[in-house]
Length: 497
Image 1: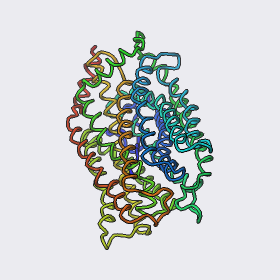
Image 2: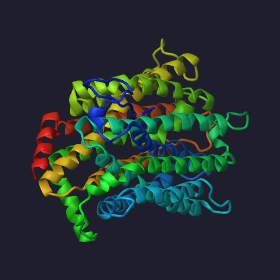
Image 3: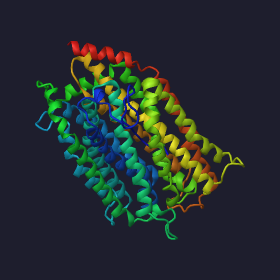
Image 4: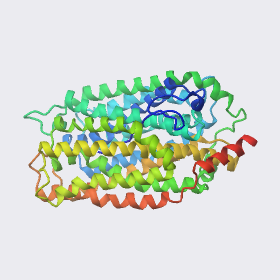
């Protein structure tokens, strides 16, 4: 129900919606911003595959223990502890006629698509241990391929947009298009590849459908990345002119020092550790989402596809909502306020069903579906502001970090941000998988035939129990120190050097 999102192009001084203020954005044109944001669709598809389909496929379709499945996925995430900073540092120090970031983004496309396809198409003669091993190996390869796209892509955004407000706009495009990609991809997958039948309910139990679905997903990821590279190529000469020509060579001892330097920044600490706690609820929800949809809400894939209408409505409204929040309340207040609102709104319908309020619509009903679609629209609206703001805050931290150490390290800063998400997802995957086994959730379960006490425990875990971590994370965000005034001082100091 919560997914990442992002949005609009606006200038608070003279424009609104998707209109363009050339005085504000300078050389960065609208097609460039859209192309940059289109690349986020590749990550949205990969995340949809992992969060919605992957654990369900290995646990419910192939019959692997949820605990074993989640541990294999978590082990894959451990490798990100090395690949994330590696990709960031390498792209910080790489320089070619195609720039620092573009070669990494371009050459990640085919490995990403191929390994994603193979992840969902293991050989038929593997036993349970062989399937777990296959899952672990190809999850590592998918995540490694995504890392060498995702970290340079985030760093590229900080380089493309230097203005305090323009960064929010650029990352809003990225989140907006990425979220739209997910909002379309998941229901399209349900409708085209996983229709509900008498034989398969829930329809994700149809093993044969995963072949063409994963092939389709791979092609879309390649196209999204190529559009990103092609559409932003005109900015390479400008970015190369700003690149430090005396780049230090890569070595692991220097990488350790660069990471230590990043963690010495107090605002970075606040966002990094706060994000870990806040994203925990999203990672657990990613494990439980398909189980909630089919067994707690008792919806079919066709009903769940209607959630996309709520998501698209939230996207449209975000065009007006996000610039209002970021210009009126600044970034820290926007982040904290939106996160609190998401926690409350997501939990309300879950609590209503858990405690069986007589007036609240029953699972599987059209009335409940309408409520959930509206709920999805509101959380989408808030998530757009939340995630676009976080990315923009990390970009501002790169400026403060440059002032502190005398060197720009977008790759290192954003690799740590990427790893914060993945480390949290690792804990969430293990925690969610273990809990599924702890409550004895049956494999190959048919909608409406899971014992009521197990369904109740599922809803409690996915709702109130994990929300505590989000609230704790918000307390850490209070320590973030960069606002509009402080960022202006940082830029003026950098320009004097």
